[in-house]
Image (cartoon, rainbow, N blue to C red; front, side):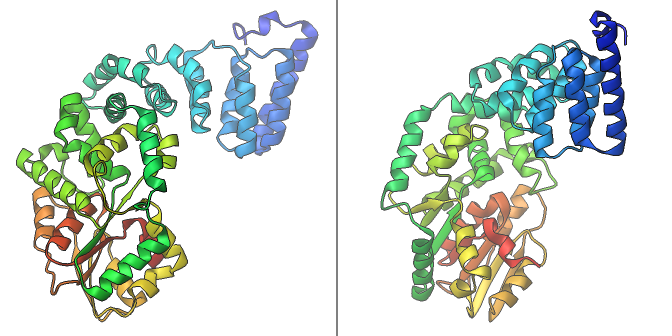
Length: 422
């Protein structure tokens, strides 16, 4: 172990250190993580700056429970930074526990030397984002460009850079206060009130839509925003959109024609702005969600500001489904319902659970953007007030907009599809 710090041990303490470390390794082989921690703590009393001791703790962390991982991280933080690879691994253990502030000093020290390897780039950028250090994140653009150059010019962390750039254009405190005030106003609805409005719309047979604008939707708004395009570089716009689009389509968003992207953007905004109820992140969510704050702030600027129609939280449909499993009371025994979905088998489960007279499934194929938008454009609404349940992922706002424009009732149920689980 020469060079690992043991040269400074006395003979007696060295024997104690080696004995504790050997016992810790034996306990690790047996899977006794508690004993590993105890022996490593005893070894720390002899000499904490030792590579093999850190290695044992890191290995134990892989199978430890939550409390044991906390203790292991506390022990690892007592060591000195000596080995870049191990320091990156220790930072990863801290990052995985949400201890971003403690991970950052280690990551700043090693990320450039390691050229982002051992997850150091990912953990560094995400830690900056989670702690709201947007300026430092933006200053890392050149470093991310170097990493991207080795990967064909693309790196997923450009999405985090986009969020940081957008976040810096908004006054955080002002926006949060504005949202808090909106949440206390008569326009912000409770789940019970939302349920009542849906029932009234179904009974009246009037055009109506409930549209959710969550994490993925915010990125689509930004990806089709002229304002955002003036603030972000093309590579950042691309990664921001692809992070969502790859869950919807087998084609790249960047391969979509600009006219088709613009078509999506127009339909998206129309669907959101004209929704009878718009479900948005509350101030409580944004207060603690720095990872999406820039995206949400840009979306808020485009679809909520200046709106004098009802809004609700993103959790309103899950809350309704929790109180009314399967939404049977809300939607039961309808003579007709359309189900626009990307989920196989969902239409039949809804039809059975809600005892629908006729269920018309519109199953969204994983095609290019133009083909998918055309599917929505061609949805048949048989009569005014026909109910459609939309579970189309990030394309939900566009689908709802097209249905309500034809006189239908469109409810975005993506957030509560679990209520119809098989």
